[in-house]
Image (cartoon, one colour):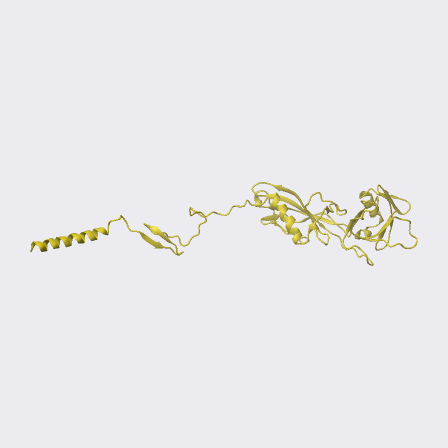
Length: 299
């Protein structure tokens, strides 16, 4: 073979070796794999995530915070409920309770008092109080400064956690206790009213009064449950008086003896003869009994 042709053949062979050798320069190949979620990852191997969701930069999911159940501190509780008489009372999430029980029997003229113990998990005393303070008014229970604890008289509630409906059903939140780990126990006290009075005629108050409006020295004259009042219109053969009110209440059916007891226990009024004259620290009250309403004469 001619010498020039040999050099050309050698050059051609060397050129091919250089070209094929270049395919191995640079170390390794880059593989691109598309996952089922449509994202891609680059590297030496494919990733098979299957579209899983992560919530942290490191790729690990964060579990929801666990809630310590009420069963760790109480037993025998069921789903929280106000029972048949207070079924419209709302409860915080994760609440359980005992059944509603009668603690003071009512009758035709006094409140019946009920109660239940409640446990709420994943909460705090402040949150429980805030829940009832906002949610009870939303279903018609407005904040009340009084509560008929003994079933008869509207005593001061003592804190902001008493509520009453327009139909005189009461709810009281008591003894809220933090047990740690988000567990809160408390007691709900309920008062269910006697039948509403049927007051004759017109002019009666639209709501119930538990004290007479203040007049002179008569600043704290307490009244029985569910009392409606109106200013008395004077008639013939009446005593001389400073102010007089008609009052109508289911309590009237309880009889004269219960009225005497009520007046004595709620205001220190002592009966004197004749009739139903009562003398107390605020003055003298003459009670004229009627069939459907009584009259309080402030003498």
